[in-house]
Image (cartoon, rainbow, N blue to C red; front, side):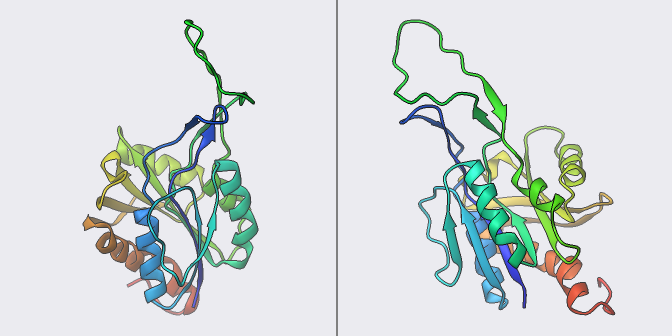
Length: 219
């Protein structure tokens, strides 16, 4: 059986000791993917940002706060894993300067400078071993398929799961699983546990089964 790394939930990038940049990712998709992976007999490590949900007790859960912490923790865990599913929604930007004290009102407009954070999944994919596979998620609001395929290529993913902004903090999801040739391997909608099972079936067929039995075909 495989050892699967799953990133889940949001990250926080602090502006000062009490304020931060984040998003409303709940971690439900990551939890559902972990549950189905465990049910199929696999070992699961979850690297999660701050969430209020409970992850499966059988999974190893590594809690982080910032995108930098998520990346560092994943880099430590990934060498022992067969693949990674990037279901987290880490912040893409961080403040260039973090104030050591609370930013106070002064009656003037506040200008903040942001810089891009390192991409967790792209960094893992760039440094993976030949046997390891990478599945990314792309949450898009415009030009959905074009942007998802661009991310699949730039992040060097084997597969990418396209979903929309309605997935954030929702009990349900609507996704499309794409391969590197732009083929749609499956379109699924419904409660996140149901969608997670469907995604995992595609992942297993396309990435895991051929590694377990190289003579098998993808059918």
